[in-house]
Image (cartoon, rainbow, N blue to C red):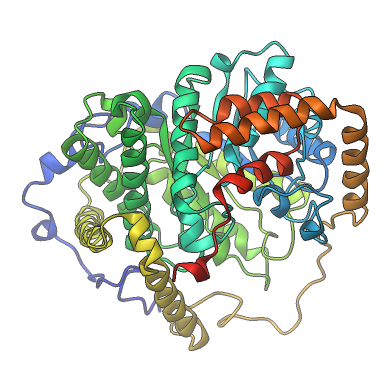
Length: 527
């Protein structure tokens, strides 16, 4: 018997829902698919004309190894690439920096310079694929490297499609891969908005992320409330930098988790669209419908995967993916069943993609738009999540802004309390985790995980030594000096940053130049 009587967000789930549970103004809250407030989806036809974009998050070891995996995924039918970077790259350090020791190529691919980026996308038609890059503090740096490689292959910025995560605020809340203090970090985000509007107009300049907060323990209500509050902060920063809302808002995108609690997840996605549409229209005066559309990518919940009986994760991922599709996602990454153990093997990554393909091509999910519209339970849950998220966002803004709340530690404390509650429920078996605290087996079957070559760090260091010996060192220093000057002023830093990268400055050198001007963020100085 299923003992669950309350939602992940804490409100009670009734045994039976009726028409009496529906909001009295349901029709206006719903609208039509593709119309304000976009509860039923951001496009009129949704998946009836084409399925969501199927992505697989991949990247490990060297650029050459990751490139081989991308070609495998493209042959298997994936429709978009999603790049994982190693921790030194995420933190703006080169592979030969002492602080990078032991982490090179471990949780993603090591990218130190334009030479690595060339290898990463060798043989891949950048005007045909959509590429998502999970990179935040140095997001603008990796985007410029991608653009430079595309230009070398005759692909202009106007032809590039993709997304950089570029969401620094959630790093201060839940993840920790920040470099600079919040104010210069927000300036870098706004500069990226302005640069892409002119130079890479089809690029999604930010993926405002609730995923990592959810993985840290946030409830569905906390996930969307804190994510949308961060979104408000980015919009305010861009407007303060002189951008008109309808000039940048259509390129904003979001990133959420999909848990196994399918009904609440569907309701969460629908509530998030409705709140964002209202915020953009009523608070920021957006006129362009695309500025009001909450377009989002979804990844299935890595935190819910278990190392015990890992094959059961195949079922979890299928349910999570189903929730994302029923919730109206624009693109989806399904986790591999072995990710609780190590980086996914090729077979596991292919099975994860096949899960999406079964949902898209063997079910009738793509035959109609928003099949849960009007459902007593889903509409009631959507309204409940919407009201709770609105109330939690109001608590954030009582501090003044999302940044002020971050510096007061508000979001972090709320998420930690939720994570502690979840851990207690798992430990007591009040929350059932199949194979972990119920239906366990005495002996697990052996599993051979993917292992990263330990010689990668030395090879990357050798490549960097060769790069520094071959390039024009004086030209690099001049370009970095121009970048530091721009960072000290008010101009858009992406233009001198691109010039430095073209001269073969490294990721670490570019980020280091900005550190010299903007400093580092140390949370102990704030909290």
